[in-house]
Length: 477
Image 1: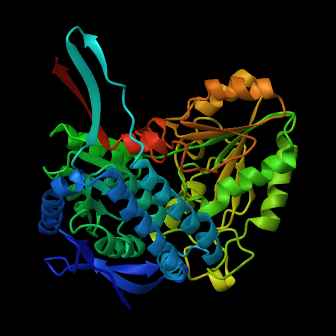
Image 2: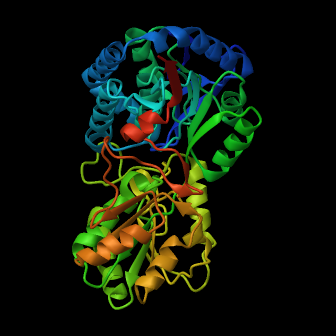
Image 3: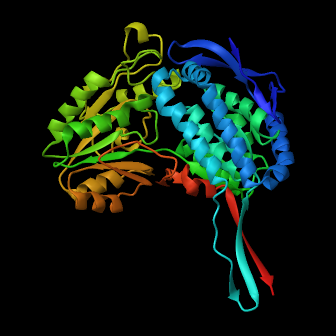
């Protein structure tokens, strides 16, 4: 049994109340450990530690912050096997894909933010009023509260604390209740390479998260989560005029035109839709296909999925994805499918697999057609291995359907017409538009959405600058 503890002021600590929650391996449904169920006192301790460390860390030079984060990245890389095994146990993820598509990527992202610490830019100094010189300072905000989701525990922790710490802030971070293990491991490394109190991790449930976002200390609150969680955070922050940084849900549209390479589009959408069991806010879950090739594309996607989109246990080298995160999430996905309207058709999947996967929270790769724009499966985020396919007749209808949801995080266009691709990319109302691909991200480019997908950017210098404040300084001469 694994025992997880909070890390506050560089020290491991149990919840003051002694309360714990059970950790369940989604691949087996069995309990493998416990984590603290932190309360208000624990959160307060963490914020006091972060506040005490804030002035010293803000005064550290950019090169000092860079060196600390580079040492951080080196230690994660050196312990790669340990992190991959722990992430897999806590999430059911496939070992090899976790190593290549998550751990290697997050180490690169951490090193990017280490470099960003030395690259803050502002307006050049100048005389905008006679006899006075003005310049702009970018400064750390101060103390930051953060909440991360359960779909990518390691990576989302890096996306949150790395830019904040690189910019000179101190952090109190709460991982998702079901997946705290690797976040705590990161905090243990932080205790070795960062001053005490710079990164504090408190484990717990929704009530713990509420304490993190409503506490009076943080100057900014940042979460990645559902739209409902985002509205709650924004409401709580408004009472104290806190800044918020919200990366919320998605319902990515993949638009496939008749001139697209259908097999290539099916593969890109299949990977983008089923990777991580579809538990990704950018998942290619909502496909719009020109009516002239709709049936051919559905057949091509189904054939690809039968051969390539199989659920499996952690060491299954031929599987594409593991289980859903929890029994609750499995029930949610099954609920969407059980409530599907009579005009919908499940072309592929739709069930739980049996055999060796029967005890875990696994679900088959699924394709649903025949849906209408107002249907729940089109409008709401399923967050599972479910792809819907709808036909469209022309560019205007494609845009109307693609933009006709509350979310605006990610989308893609598949076409061989360069002009059409550029025209669509300018009119799709999403924070990211991929052309002839879906789901790749790089540290140098921003990730963040519009509408109910939230605001603020992760990754890139835009994400880094979100953790700074701007100050005008004017000097008479």
